[in-house]
Image (cartoon, rainbow, N blue to C red):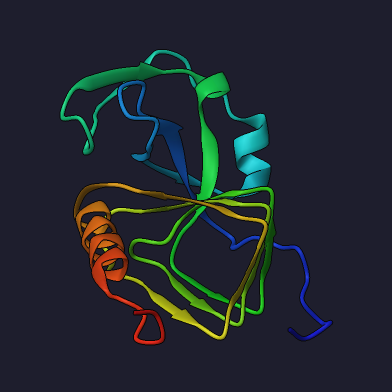
Length: 143
């Protein structure tokens, strides 16, 4: 990975909360720059959760920023990352919590170091199928 990687963020990021029922990050429908998020005051906001289909109320203390859109040569450290819908090219993810639910993303020449991966929905079905298949394949070198 190139040493010119910088820890930076896109100009606008999605404001998300963790679904209290599943723990999965859910976008609130609001985006902000890191600077405007720091000074914002969110209190008793409600939205329909796309994960559990229930309504959630949230405050600023519940919210965090999630990178969205296209990213090139970025270094994400100790961040929550939702791969779905993203385009990550030559990015480095260090000690991030990475979520995937649908699999509609682009990931090119990127690295993961010490990250935790969480799967939900369609991505979890494919992950479980892949694990099941890999367990059933016998090593031809063993009798």
